[in-house]
Length: 141
Image (cartoon, rainbow, N blue to C red; front, side):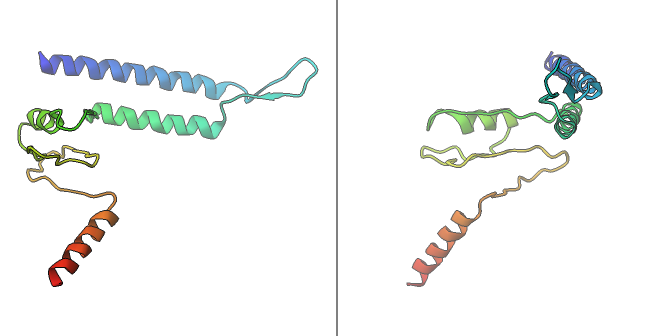
């Protein structure tokens, strides 16, 4: 049942994305300005670069749908069970689950086919580097 539901949802998302692409193609064929009766031409809000950018975005979303790449946001107050929920979804403990706050930073978990061991990436390493330097300094003192 789960597989069928996931398949149906991805098919519907793909259909809607294709429909959006068709609408953009129609916009692309429209003139960029509309002549007024006696007024100068008024520019339309859809420019060619804007349409090209939206095409790229839709193509990227179609690629993600075809690969079943999904984003699931889990938000809650401290100690609400966010890490426990994520660990249950993944089926293993990928996030620490303790009595104290452990995941204070936003965390992105990405499945990579064939990868068994998790890899940790910090997008903002400056605070971590600063902490390490302070710890090393205190250990030397």
